Image (cartoon, rainbow, N blue to C red; front, side):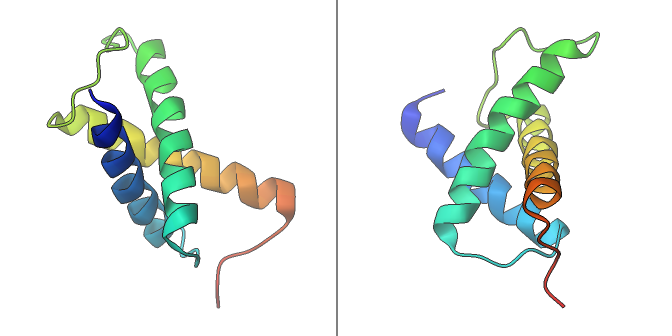
Length: 88
């Protein structure tokens, strides 16, 4: 997957994760959480018995699910470390 595709996927996955976790913020934080989440999601996918072997594709539903789950995990850990909660 190309560099631009990773950025687009990270931005979308981060925005979805922030929506799930009811976290406010701008597009830069969505991008950061999404890109980190993609890395975490890829790592989680490699641990699964049907792991992707590091070959994530932009149009693969599994890639998107792993990126969103990873971004949600990253956001959850961020909240634990900083002590910030969701918006009211």
